[in-house]
Length: 323
Image (cartoon, rainbow, N blue to C red):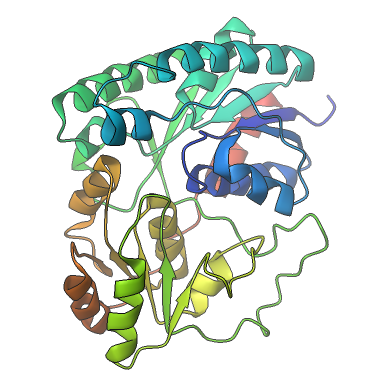
């Protein structure tokens, strides 16, 4: 049998979904599989930075429509969801892959319509949400994806008591330093040694006040995404060399876990607050909800024990079944 072809689709809200699925894609490519990628949204530039030409289906943004707009899912979200499923079905039929791996609920729904074996990889679970509607919807979605998929990979670093039924726990997924398909190098000698690495999400605020507070306390702050920052193929080597990471999103939490770097989480969205709750008792991670709280946590959070990167477990499992 020829080497398998694997389609990888990331969810379009926030760039972290793209970097996680990029990591998964590289796990497959290291083992000789051909990979095609899709997703859309802010993560597209990271895929292109790593040498991919991704397909961009219709984008859905539930965070803006539900949490920050009018508290409903009316407007563009529902019709765009249907369009996204349609777009991905058509793309899968054109690509004709041997399997689909995704963290995107709409791609998961598209896979059986296109007769493509499905593997799901996501940390999204009912335990992340306080909002009753989000909790019930996520529970139903998780059950659906467990039923549709050959395997539902659940990358986590927190205790197992909150794992949904039917998932397969794996280690945290992080994009390694040697991912660049454009000639980029995994050499870290030119990176320097960041003191505090600040990694905001698209929903973070008060970043200027936080930087001022940390610098007033004598810390040297490197801010990802500011005017002095150049987009890099992988953030992991920077996380590895930092003394402490301050972030909002799940992807950087996973990178800190793989790197063994102290991590302070300041959440802003419902999902980020949920991740923070699950991390509350995990060594090497601290959750803070204010500028002052972050500044205090930066001084006291210890380094965690490094976790094994989960990308190998995913690629080995999927390819063993396809081959």
